[in-house]
Length: 153
Image (cartoon, rainbow, N blue to C red):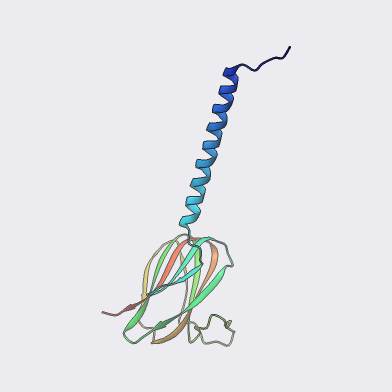
């Protein structure tokens, strides 16, 4: 004679499986949403300048891009880091991202390390021209740094 599993046990098993499946779906959706909020690029070029994104950027990661400053303009660095330290250099004439800087290059116009203290620093004394802005992570960093070219008032 066959033994049958009581219907109550089958129903409890089905309900538990549905609850576990729903929990897995909701957990997965939350992780995906957080990942979608993070920028997909390290440095974005904007109409006003550059934005460097530091989400999961470890010590040693570096990158740069060129900007142009015209007569009557200045450079504004808006530091929005919440963790870590990032070294920024701005070098005159070095706006070609395909050419690596050498030890014989001119000294940097700006050479400063930013940390989670945050804030805006304006550089009014930069001469018009093309510049390479390089971002180098010195301590694992989280947040954004904006390098915007603004018109003097």
